[in-house]
Length: 529
Image (tube, rainbow, N blue to C red; front, side, top):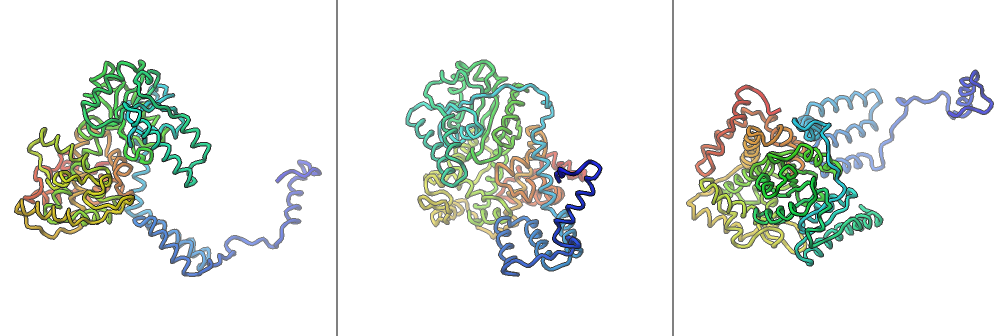
């Protein structure tokens, strides 16, 4: 309260009390516990509608519904009874698996930025300008990440038409945000003013960070990095957006392997929160420290991975998709598998996910596997699908059919016929497969491969793997990630279930041999944490 002009330090308290008595409308002043909370208009129907909305928005989380219970109780109970009721609700939620998962994720996301041998005081390079090689969907999305953070971006392409398409795509994305009220016209103009394009590698000579986002082919990567090595200034960081290829091999195309690393963005890059940072054998600590700090600037959650085929996320998803393929051979339909995984909480089932990302991507990886690992077992159904040109949403046909301009996945009679014909060719009699088996086979395949990744030191810690799957692959938040979920289920249970799967002659028995780390932790009653 401001001091009265007539008050003195000695009379201030008395004057303030007199003012309060003068302006107060009610005597005695009511206490909060005696106030009543009137029921909302609509009465009980209001709370029915509120619960329906909460259930639709967060179907797997109990807390929103309990919050509504507490508000409703405030309109029906005394303050003392209401506080006791709220306390009971809080204790129930605190002990729930969802609460444990969310607390785990909260800590895991923050721990991901901590790298054991890169202390917080590691010097960082100054990043004031960025170049992106490739103006396709991925390259354009990556460019937007930096434009959004106020960093100037040079977009390079080999042809003017491709450069024009990339710039138009970025412009369209921003214009859509303006039309929806998510971006002001002024901010839209500021961001577009930071974007420039070129067909000349020489225009990248002043860039502090260059990110290559060309086709996933080692020959294409080599051509790009040899040119970057020739034109980029000393100390520039050279990054590849590769999702599977060997970063050490890419770094060897340059005379500066200490400046090279992987920055694996997830599509759409301007939306997805995860950034997989791939550390090469010779990547300098200050380069790693710089990009981890830069990830925060562009609002990404960065997780460090070592070098292996597929890194953390895609190496695991390959096993997940292999199991999905075996399930088709044995009796499932794509819709049954997807529905089971979506009921578990995945943002998308494996077949809808493949249609979205492009079935030709997995096809190319399998073609490479057939040459490098001829003994590795795959269902060939996906190959047959791709041989028919059914690459997913972009071709209007994949595991599902699609109507132009829409993303709804429509069951395809042609695909079901293809699956049935393939089963007959293999001499397989389809069997009934439960949703429980579908979930266990797909999720536990992630767990077993994650354990191998930890054994090899590809991931720094188990929680990093959970962060990758929550933010990059749509794993349900309320499950806390594959390894946290395995802890909740119990590693003994996981191990016993895997041993059962290994007996299936149509599955891959060798894969279901437990990773040494998983077997050891289960035997010692320990957890991945």
